[in-house]
Structure formats: structure tokens, C-alpha cells
Length: 198
Image (cartoon, rainbow, N blue to C red; front, side, top):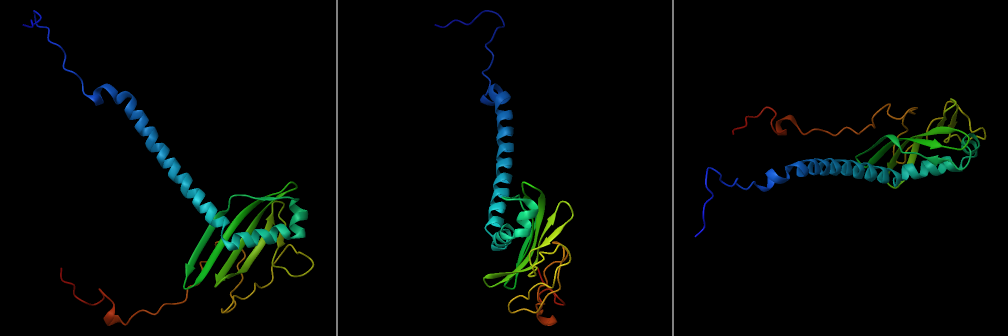
């Protein structure tokens, strides 16, 4: 027969799993949660960057800048594009509007490729396309003259199946103009002038 120890001594009750392990589980759990958040943000940024790089406006504009002798002379060759900033892309009624600002890093100088383009169908029509040099100069890539002029640009080409638009000098100046969509007659608009029973 088992014997009980004499006196008031009784064995301490066994602690639960959390009581024994919380000192390492809590920090590891917090670090895992923070790591997951950082990973999701990095994944979203990487996805956004790759989708911009695959966009036709970006690739066509970058190819035009890389092939332009005035840009090559000003920045040196080879120059590399940086991470696009101030990127806006919207689609409404079959018209895709893109505004991009892409830093360019060259061996001689740095600059910024500024792009405003619209696409209806398959082809992009550039409304604004120039390289702003860090020294203040500007190389207009839409200029068809021999000068490769730095300065004011000529009127942009008209969009296919669309009326000519006003030139825009800087990305982000204006939002794309969406055609007006007619509203249904007032008596057919839900919630307007009618009683709703709940």
C-alpha cells in the first residue's frame, strides 16, 4: 500500500502547456505574424512592378528612350531604368490611360522618363513622352524634327477613333476624360423618390 508523505507537503499540480511554453511561443508567433505581413507587402509590390514592366506603354516608352541618340548622349550608355513611381493606370469604356514616371540611371547622368499614353484597341498613343535630365534639360521623344529639342513639345498625336486631346505636360495633371454615361429616367432610379419598405 502506498504511503503518503507526512506533513503538509503535497505535490504541486502540473502546469499546462501554455504556462510552460509561453515565453518562446509568444515572440515566435509575433515574429511569424510580422514576417507574413512583410512578405505579403513584398509580394504585392513585386506583382505591381512586374505588371507595370509588362505593360506596353512602359516597354514601348523605354525602348524609344533607349534608342534615342540624344538620350544616349546625355545619359551615356547603357543606362538602366529604375523602379517606376507615380504610376497610374485606369481603364474606362475601352480606353486605357497610363501615366508613368521612370527614373533612368546612366553612367554620365541621371534622368526621368515621363510618359502619358492612351490605348484604344491594341496600339498605345503617347500624349507625353520626354526625358527630364537632372541638370534641368529636357529631351522630347515625340519631337519628329532633327533637333531632339529640349523644350516645349508639339501637339501630341491624335488617338485612333478619337478626337484630339489637349497636351498634358506633367503626369498626374488631369484624370482621363471618361465619356458621359446617360442616367436612367428619374422614375426608374432605385431609391430615388420611391418608398422602400423593410
